Length: 53
Image 1 (tube, helix red, strand yellow):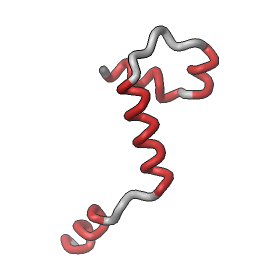
Image 2 (cartoon, one colour):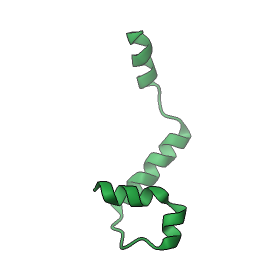
Image 3 (tube, rainbow, N blue to C red):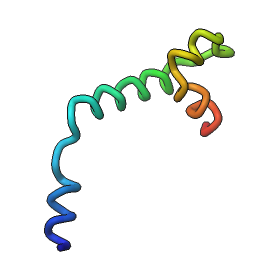
């Protein structure tokens, strides 16, 4: 079982996960003023990122 879990952890992330990670990195790297209501609707994760800082 331990070998199976290790192999699963070592598998490369899917393209969707990579795109999400890059988007999150871009959001964190860019200094953001108060998010507009439109941005909140498009990016619900944006509020969570600012809270977690």
